[in-house]
Length: 134
Image 1 (cartoon, rainbow, N blue to C red):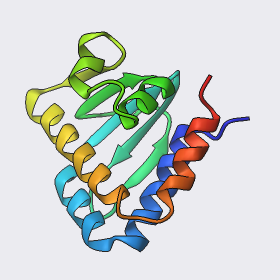
Image 2 (cartoon, rainbow, N blue to C red; image 1 turned 180 degrees about the vertical axis):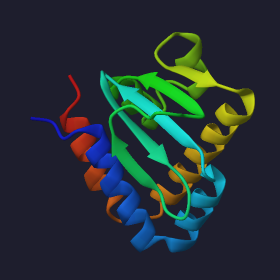
Image 3 (spheres, rainbow, N blue to C red; image 1 turned 60 degrees about the vertical axis):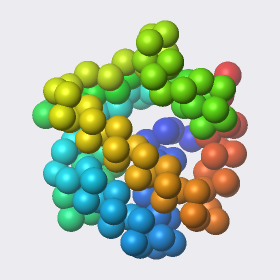
Image 4 (cartoon, helix red, strand yellow; image 1 turned 120 degrees about the vertical axis):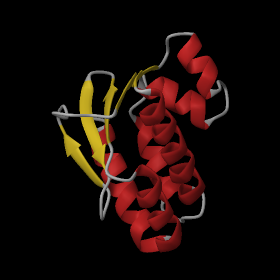
């Protein structure tokens, strides 16, 4: 059975904190105290900022931004088969929230990607993400 997306993200965040602490701190600062709720193929979880990043299973009571997508779309984005704007325009990804919160979520995603490419553990997690794709 494929590993849950929330579990993969939780492990990824822990690796970022240990392997690239400066990039991790930048990501924490970018997200601030905002909560982003994510639904990937019906698996709902949230990423909460603050002093540290926390990934929690289940819906968030209050979220600044809400994102709905699929594992396949995430892989298409990571493999540059589709751009973020195109994913939203085609309905493969839905993003809801105030303009400020959506922008903060976007900037946090960029900070996450910039941090992730600097770690040695992320390719293994990406392989696990791929293993769960249909």
